[in-house]
Amino acid sequence: MTNSSFERPSEFALIAELFAPLARASGAFGLKDDAALIAPPPDHELVITTDALVEGVHFRSDDPPASIAKKALRVNLSDLAAKSADAAGYLLALSLPRTANMTWLRSFADGLREDQNAFDVSLYGGDTTSTPGPLTIAITAFGFMPHGAMIRRASAKPGDLVFVSGTIGDAGGGLDVLRNGSKDNDYLVDRYREPQPRLKLGRALRGLANAAIDVSDGLLADLGHIAETSGVRIEVEASRIPLSPQLRALWGEDCVIHATTSGDDYEIAFTVADNRQGLIEGIAKLKAATRITEIGRVVAGQGVALLDGNGREIPVPRRGFTHF
Ligand code: ADP
Ligand code: MG
Figure 1 (cartoon, rainbow, N blue to C red):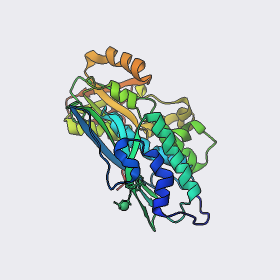
Figure 2: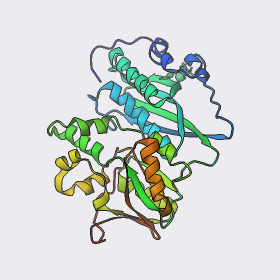
Figure 3: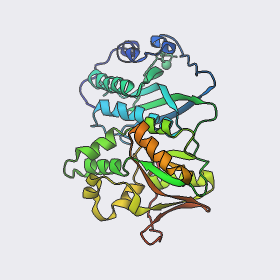
């Protein structure tokens, strides 16, 4: 966010200029009504999720506004992806400090437009208010899916294999690069600023995965949520965790522990019955063009363990990110 002089039109002019063009769905009424209408297709359920991003907590003041917009939308789309929903739209509640000027806001809206095109979603409404506090972006995203098809966290079964998409830890590495000014590493910084919601993969998992979660707090912490809600134990083999060469170069020796406990990956971790292994690998490649890696197993018991090459548990100091 820039700190140049405060130059902003009225709330209504701002909505008309920046946000009305993004409200493409007919049920959004061009943002000219009090509320929007959403009609799920027959026999479908509405899947809905919300995530707020706060300046200084979830993004840095000097992050590009278009990236901030994309991250705000994508972290929500990532939740829909993990549940296997077809994303349809979102609501946007903005709390703006006086330092958020029109230049900043125009770039922010440009970022939203690009992502609406990339992920085929529409803006449906929102709220705009000023704040004496940090800039806050709250997005509520929704999608549809056939009745009963949502992939829950709570349905992993002993014997399932555990997979994860993409590579793990890159966003944590990117944040490290930004914070510590270590040598430029655009790949890692991009992974932190603009995560990829795995919507195609999530869609491909429908009817196949037993349980899924999007990795936002750290892989081990999030697998812990599956283990807890499903009443099972998850064992992960450290040597199988997919790590990018850029992250290995940055973090070296204890890369795996770092990577599995740092947040903001927005990959999908999921479990499938072991007789579906081949099927799931084929489908991920064909339908989602997304790398997936088998990293472990669901067994009876509780908790999550990271295992070394000898099957011994590696002590992990801090499982993942929490806000409180
Ligand atoms: P209300 O009088 O109910 O507070 P507003 O004046 O805040 O309504 O909003 C008018 C219209 O503009 C509504 O359709 C609302 O959804 C939309 N809107 C307001 N702020 C935003 C925003 N940041 N993004 C998208 N739509 C918005
Ligand atoms: Mg209002």
